[in-house]
Image 1 (cartoon, rainbow, N blue to C red):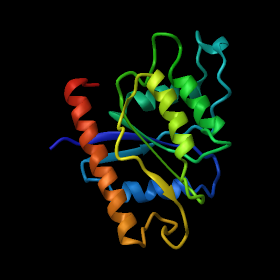
Image 2: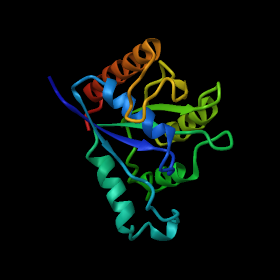
Image 3: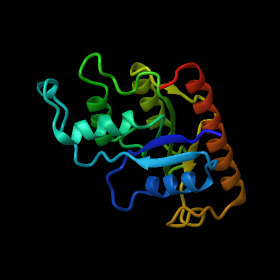
Image 4: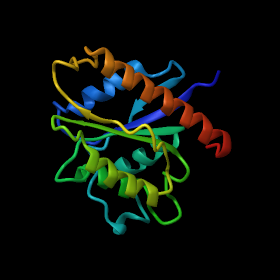
Length: 188
C-alpha cells in the first residue's frame, strides 16, 4: 500500500481559525495512508510579476512544499462571498511564473467551515474556479460545506456528533480514492 503526501492550506490567518480545527478533524479521520503537512501562507509578501525572475525565499518555500506534495487539500473560510486574500495570494505565487504552475494536474480537495448555514459554499465555488484555471484535478463530489459549532468540534479536532464524523470520514476516504485515481493516470 502506498502512502500519499498531502499538503494542506488553511485559508485563514487567524490564530483561532475554525478551519484549522476542521483540518485537525479531517486529518484525524483520514485513511492511514494519507500523510499531511501544512503549507503555511502567512509570511508571503503580496505577489507581483516583478518577482517572477527572482522569487523571495517564502515563495520558493511555498513552491517547494507543493512540489513535495502528491495532493493538496484546501480548508478555507469564506470572506465577503469569496476566498481570503492570503489564500488567493498564495495561489498566485504558486501558479507563476508563466510555465511553472505548481498546481498542474495535482489532485486537490476543497472544504471549509463557517458558523453560517451555507458553510463556505460560495467561497468554495470561487476557489474551484481559480483551481480549475490552474489545472488542478479537483475532487468534485462529495462537496463539504461544514457549519461549525463548538458543540460538534473540539479544539483538537474531536468530532462529537456521529453523523458529522461519518460524513467527514467518508469525505476523506473519497479524497484518498480521488488521489489514487488521479496519480494512476497523471503521476507526479
